[in-house]
Each structure stands twice: as structure tokens, then as C-alpha cells.
Length: 118
Image 1 (cartoon, rainbow, N blue to C red):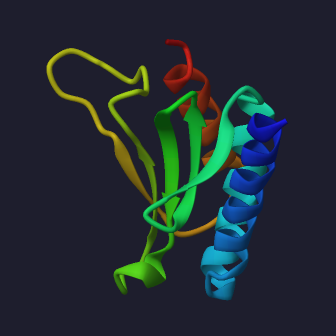
Image 2 (cartoon, rainbow, N blue to C red):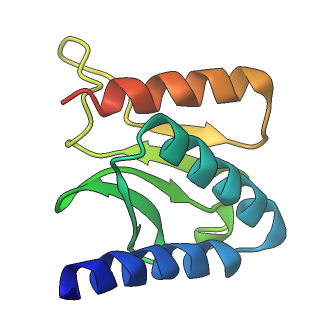
């Protein structure tokens, strides 16, 4: 039962982190939350440095960072070394994100699907 409570608490913490973001960041974070869990429902929502993140076991795979955190003009969708995005000797692991769009949704879904193939 303690494990279930922990999963519930982690989800609640993630949702609270999303709700605490400024409106523009919150809108993107809610969208990312929905997309990640649709593509990879096995990932567990948690927080990573106070931001929404999605884990497989104890390994963070993908995270969202609102632009307001570091006063940047964009939010960031990031992937950790637990993500299967390897492409030769160099590949991107963070993406600037300023808006929801169909094109961005397609790309994000593909990235999350690829990242979780480990």
C-alpha cells in the first residue's frame, strides 16, 4: 500500500507543480503531461527540480521546464540519459518550446515514443 501512496503522491506533486506555473507555461505543461502519458502510459509522473517529469522506475526520462523558471523566452522539453534518443556521437536532448501546434504534437509524440524504447 505504501508504494501506491507514493505513486499517488508523486502524481499529485507533478500536477501541483504544473498548476503553480505561470499561465503560458502551465498551458504547455498540461499539454506535455497529456501527450507523454498518452504515448508512454508506463511512465510515472513526478517532479524534477520542482518541474513536471516522467520516470521509468527511478530513472527520469523526460521533463518539462517552464520558461519562467529561468526567465527565458521559451519553455524546454528535455530528455535525460535514460532516453533512447542516441543518434551517432551527438544528438539533441533539449528542445525549446513556445507554442502548441499540430506539428509540435507530432514531433513530441515521436520523440517520447523513441525515448521510451529502452
